[in-house]
Length: 80
Image (cartoon, rainbow, N blue to C red; front, side, top):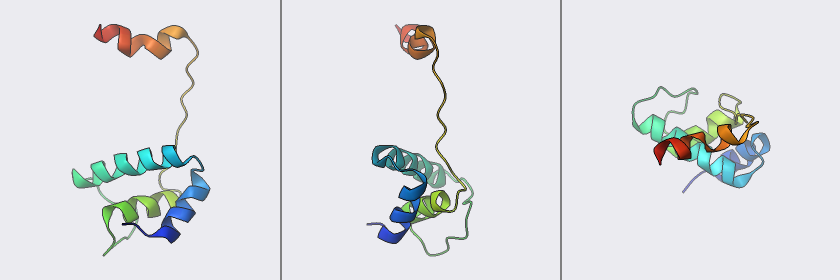
C-alpha cells in the first residue's frame, strides 16, 4: 500500500495517472538497484519515497518530441 496524501501531491505534478504509475515504478526499480534517494524518506517504503520525490519536484516527466516516422519506429525497425 502507499500513502494517499503523497500520491495526491505527486498527482498534482504529474496529472496523468498512468504516466505517474509508470514513473513511480521506474523509480522504485532504480531505488531497489541502489540509487540514492533524492529526499529524506527514512522509514518510508520505496513507493512512498518515489511519490515524495515527485511531489517535491525532484523527479518530473519529460516529454521528448518525436518528429518523424523514423524517430517513432527506429527502435522497432532496428530490432526486426
